[in-house]
Length: 326
Image 1 (cartoon, rainbow, N blue to C red):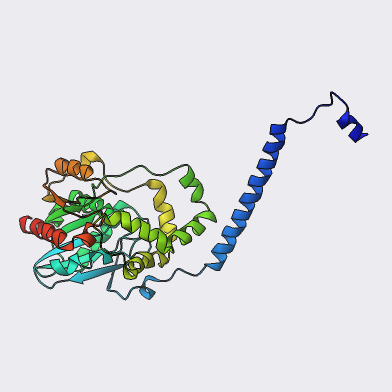
Image 2 (cartoon, rainbow, N blue to C red; image 1 turned 180 degrees about the vertical axis):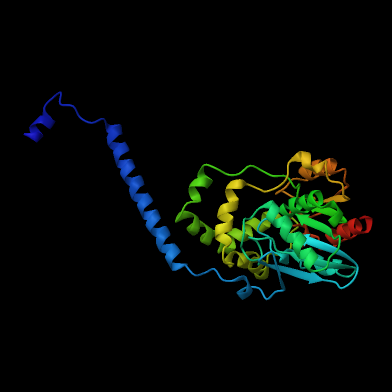
């Protein structure tokens, strides 16, 4: 009976596009189920990769505000200088600039969580980073230091200068305009849910290929060779316990920073230093920030965004000049 009705002229059949839509929906649902299962399995297999910071970095550390802060230190005499890295930058990025400055200054490079090897506790916010830096400088006896902030660290340096101008001798903004940017939404928001975020995080932060591509862009056209050591120094801090969770909290808020109007309120001596070939933060952004701060703008010839790794001598000379004028 059924076949007869189907074959009769005039019997209504489901439109072809509806049949294809139904098949497509089934295929998408099946693919989503497979991806979810694969993600769960991958997360299970790679579980346990995170370790305490002390198991990955030999120190030194200093305990402040219930947080174990990792840092590096160079020099025993001269005026104090504090070096702050940017997004996903461990204090290792200063390993060439630090010793050069250490000839005439007491230099400390601080890891800002969730980057480097500082303990991942508290909320990853601009106010939190400022408080940690001020506490560390006080604990280490660095009175009125020159604070140098690279990229995201420029906002921390500028924020401290606004919050406590008497506590710093000056600031240097290196490849960072100190301004906030909008948070991510849409697809990013969807990827922040489990198990997908965990899988993506572990895949990306464990990939030499991904880090090599990012570093090639950040270093610029005149970059030094990207060695296995450099890849390891950037990758390993992502294994510190709590990094994934803090990044999950940070990403929806975009790049943390200040409002443009805040820059005009800075009263301490400031210098803006920028890589000539910076394609992450454009030199034009640096010039606008320098104008707002009424500060000199100093380009670093041949350098990209990670100017301290490409032209360490030129960067250290610019910082040294700023320290002499503070």
